Amino acid sequence: MFSNGVKRELTWLITSLWIFLFIGWLVDDWLSFLILFFVFYIFRHLWSMRKFEIWMDGRTQKSFPPASGFWSELSYLVSKKQRALEKHVDINLYKSEQFKAASMLIPDGIISLDQMNKIEWFNAVSKEMIGVRRQDVGSKIESVIRQPDFIQYLRAENSSGSIKVTLPGVQARTYDVQLIPYFDNHKLLVVRDITELYQLAQIRRDFIANASHELRTPLTVLRGYLEIMVDHREQLPDWRLPLEHMDTQSHRMQAIIEDLLTLSTIEAESITSDLEDVPVPSILIQLEKDVLQLSSENHRFNFEIDQNLTYKGYLEPLKSVFTNLVSNAVRYSPDGGDITVRWYKNKDNAIFEVQDQGLGISKEHIPRLTERFYRVDKDRSRVTGGTGLGLAIVKHVLERHQAHLDVESVLGKGSLFRCTFKINNGS
Ligand code: ADP
Image (cartoon, rainbow, N blue to C red; front, side):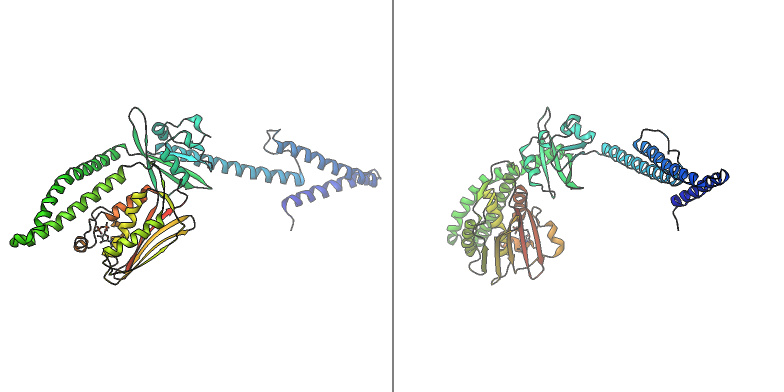
């Protein structure tokens, strides 16, 4: 019924009361001894309280203060709790040391940032990679990595992607930097050295750009002669079919070269070149007229455009995103199909959507659609003048805008291509 402390106190109280009363009975003055007992009892409590306070205050090294009754139980319970807490702190300290030791071994640079993007701690690798020093703890990360691309990425707080940052030095190195949110608005900045990979990719990009550029001039000459011959095909009846075939194929070649050059330009341009106000509604009005021609008026178009919604971005690349997606909807939809194009605001995003009732795409192809030259239906792509590069261009342009593409499709029913742009894209 009683707790240990109360039991101890009662035992102490009854025993000492009996002793006082017994002495009082012996000297025949039990009332004085009863009063003396109460005075003693109150004094004992005050004395124990003082000792307890000194002990709690840490002014004595004793594990627990000498006390009796309720106070001895209380100090025992407090010191037990204190030991448990110390053990807990030790475990946490051990875990945190273990985590820090492990983070030192990770080959990537790791920097922890607080809510204000101030450096909290970093591992040894990040010191070597980006030169963050002990005295930088507490300063903003922007004062260590002063790259405009990085600052823009940091402000956009886009945790889904990463950016490439090239830091100057004796030997400039390129890093892949990713911001990962964790615990209570804190962020981990993971920095990976991709210099060798980047250089290889650069060699490949340069090769493709140079090859396409070199092919462009001879092809223009060939196409010039071909066009003359096609115009005079009536005089060469045996060559009529081969000439028409050569003409179609040379058109395709030219389209592929143009798309490769577009892709190289988009890849080469830094994301720091100036953003401009893109009048998306007027671009889409013009596009509506152009696609009517492309579809030879065989499709029904429905353009649902928010006339007031403009976007800060790169004009020409964005035009090619809109054109590629709408022309795909035309090319992969049977005659008579409905095609809906939408441009609207949803929370902090501007959305561009193209929905068709065409062939649709089965699930396994969707993740690969943006690869260069990946085609679900090669024949249809060729017949309709596809290059296999349209969606690769779309993907790269969206990456430059830190936007993303979602594809929903049901085979035989149609597809929906959705581009999501953050309106507050650091511009
Ligand atoms: P292409 O020039 O061949 O159209 P893209 O890169 O634009 O190349 O598209 C890649 C492939 O994705 C296409 O070959 C096609 O198979 C598929 N695709 C793209 N858009 C659609 C669509 N709206 N409906 C069905 N399939 C599509």
